[in-house]
Image (cartoon, rainbow, N blue to C red; front, side, top):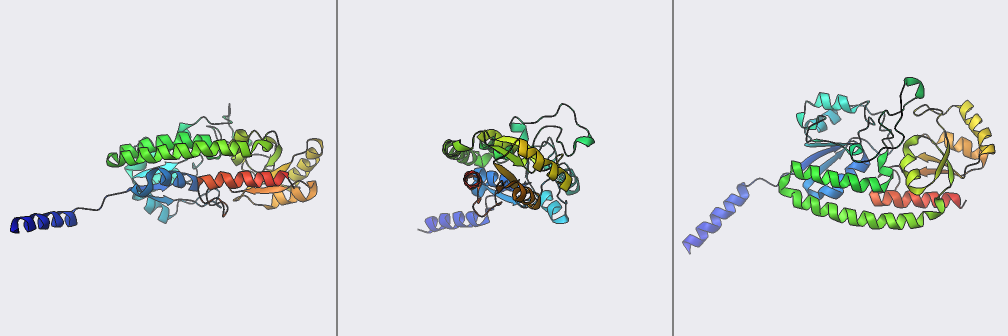
Length: 302
């Protein structure tokens, strides 16, 4: 009896002394990568998002609170392809965290896992905010998300080998759910194929490419250059020769240029969520595409 109690006591004390299972601290640069990391990591990761859905990720301040998060991160999940070039290198440098530097196990660039669109032959400042490696807004083609998810699961497993089976299982579930969702979205969005649209910025490029929609003009005369009244007036005249069905802008874009052109051209303006949190319906990656397609279809019926 006393021997049995002794064993129970020893086991109990050992359990109490054992540390809680550690989680991987992740700093994600954008809401979409935070959402994907949570899908794959579950309760084995602790994810902090550096930006919001209503923030232009090109222009972010590397504030002290972000530096502190970067200092304690085990993994930094970024878009890459120079999307965060204006602020992420500062964050990495000021954090002093060797884990999250480029080339380290704790730095993950999603854009490295997919084929980029719009890769320029050459780049100079006169072209505006052109990304030299190609268009970095890769998450709006859900097929890219499946590729990034598999690579991210692999990376999490390398960082936390004890929980690799969990990461692999969650990735398998995500792949299955996303594959089924893509089939459903493509069937639902079939009426959008070939529809001509005007965009604000080039951030919807992958969505248009996936759905087979046609960009005929942009509100920005050059990428990253705010629309001017003169350019919008020229665009209004051009649309009389080559009309569009929709004018698109993302939730973080200034809505006034789209509204100006929509009022004068009598073409519907549609606000798309762009990322998770960009609308009340876009609560996760699946809701993001549900809402974007719903809004596009509603737009062509106006």
